[in-house]
Image (cartoon, rainbow, N blue to C red):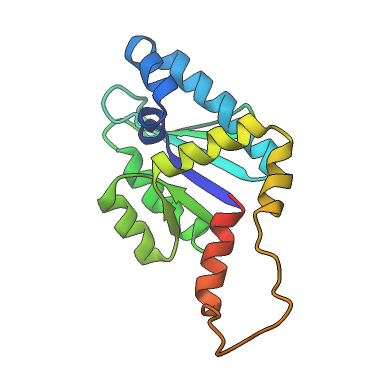
Length: 171
């Protein structure tokens, strides 16, 4: 699964990193990338983090790899939201966008991409990292056990709803 993250949005949603960001933004970004790299490795996800560079950034968009995570800095004059909008069609059927920006979330959902809030993703990130290698086993253990006997009318969700829940279950 591919996960595209609004970097500063997630950074501010994580209380331990939000405090660091107030004093040293570069150090906070480094710690965030370390956590995301470990999370991506544990879960087997492709991670892309987009940071704003629109005020004091480079004249051109910068892309680099750090800790196994693709990092994109938007060019001067362009916000990270615009870069995420451009990436949304690539993620539409194979991934998730992490942002708490309601406007961006609505626009990304129109393209067909799933959206998860930064605070919710942050909680999943902390849980997976604290569980370490057991995170994958816990995710499988959380799956409901099949019912032995069926009674009454079927209450099975639609195929689209099951696919949507499946994406979030694998986060």
